[in-house]
Image 1 (spheres, helix red, strand yellow):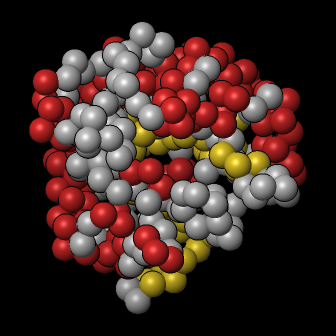
Image 2 (cartoon, helix red, strand yellow):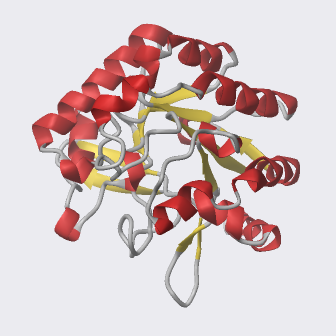
Length: 275
């Protein structure tokens, strides 16, 4: 069983909901650490001869075209993370479509290959008060074959969504959904495939969960960020919970991923989807 290895290619300051602390207008003044951290990830993946799916933010691709070139030259899949790193539910349908196509056309012009996958910032294709489920229809209309934007989590995403890959029907056709690895608990699903969950939960419990999914024939999906490998990135004065999510036990990320690459097989979403 091959599991799914993914990376959200965004810089350290691309943090949702901190416009009051770091406005978007100030992004251009921030030190970029994307190439430094991306090189670490690519070196690690190269050591294990593993390929991954990199969801590249259009903003990063435009300002750091070397990042796209580095990923593409190593033979990894390049997918879209949108352009401006704004949650889908904060955009109108027209705004989302513009952001989506801007990113897609930019990346395709740089790689010469069709982009077939998308991941929304902060797993922001949701239902309920923050409804943005309509985005799946626009993804199909725009030629995407798969999405990885719906987290089966209580506070982010859709709590009762499937926690293994599934197909969604839209008015324009079907799209395959690839959710992140989660850990069932009495409090509901908890994130385990990346971010604070990957850093906080015991390695044994994460490994056991992946083994459980693999036994039932399902792949586990991990997600990383370049800044997860950067203990010395610039710090912003964030609210307590956001600070924990961004910085808590950040030094453990590389060690955890290295152990997982030793213990399991991984590949791209594209390979699992279409071979």
